[in-house]
Image 1 (cartoon, rainbow, N blue to C red):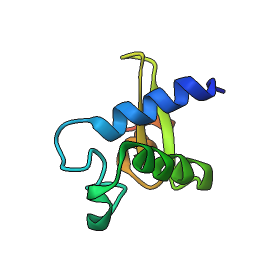
Image 2: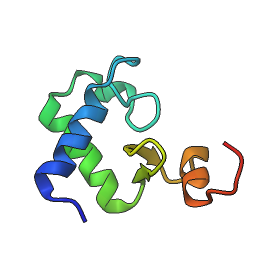
Image 3: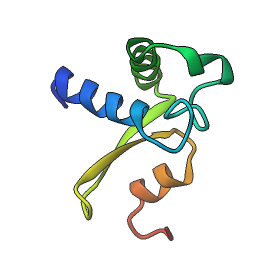
Length: 85
């Protein structure tokens, strides 16, 4: 239920994060994606969100959100506050 510009901002921040060559290549993209432009990377993540392969997870404790793959442990712990982190 985010405005489109807010969602794009979250996706851009995710793609531009330090720690990997691609921003999200280690968890979402592939080696061949690493040379892609910002708009291409954002488009790829948005498509993965639309397909349900990637989910936007909000953490009430930190008041922050993140993008995670559907089967990731972080997604499962966010869905079940009583589970181990």
